[in-house]
Image (cartoon, rainbow, N blue to C red):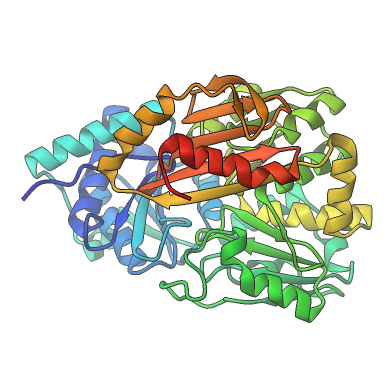
Length: 478
């Protein structure tokens, strides 16, 4: 039987449960990771292992713990399903070599995944992932997995159960004073999208005048009433409706592992991810008065560049994924890093997306300014002008990718939707930069077999035309 090719994408390895994502392959991933740690002299520090609420995630996590223990590596295994940022922060007080999270984040319910984190509590760098992949392949070829029975690992002290909650709560208290939010009398609807974010906002904001109404707050691995636990508009219809009918001041959504944030205005309208980047940058630069560089992916907003110019800070652009954003944030001591998917990280915390902290910052922005989300967006647009964004996702068979890439790479359009193309950026996909500083990006997802076509422009009436032009460049039908 052919062995599964295990390759880390934008954020870890993800695959269909029972197809490629099997206990055998998860154990190979753990064995390759263990051999990398041993080769780098990191094994003595141990590893944190955690998991989300997907199908059998806790059992896959236990399988990882058995393999690490079988290689003589201590494991701190979370007692509970926990958000990725909560697990990632735990790496620091434990002084661990890194972490392994069993999660497929926002992918469809049929998938699960294997995320690798480094000692700095952020996504492992691409060169690290390449070395781990090499060792996974070697383990597969040799059919080599060293395992220790779970109970034996616990008895020998190689597998230690722990709760990552308290250290994270202490860190949040250092980053933000939640008391003004608690006493503000807001009505906030939260949607953890059936994932590990459930219960967090009600807990953090209880005890005062602010009311929190949580929906989809139970474990349900099929993620009903949504295509997937990704906090984008099409998956948040229940949240939009609840904000409208309940009279909410805002809605906060988190994806399946709670490292991303979605935001809904008091009108029950979706605030897109690029607008959220601009709101968070404004909050840090103007409202909190901080200064420092901003990091954004090529798929995120040029509003970041315009705000950075107003406040005298720099912007650094990276490829898509926090395996690029995290190292760049650390290199330049960034104030904030963010990407189009709704993932944001902040200085003074960990170089990791944190949908819980991002949600608290958005609420704090409302409290400190006394303005509703729609008013805050108007304020941003007064500073940098209106910007409009949308995205099309198309599932594709892997063997279709070369032909599509060839078609796009050979295209040399002078203009798109009537806007002059200034230049082509190929750092991650094909990004056509336009005369209004907007862009059209065509790239393949690093986490699933999907081609994505995105655009941002200052012309509202050109969004659909730009996306249509992108489909044509890729040779795809409307």
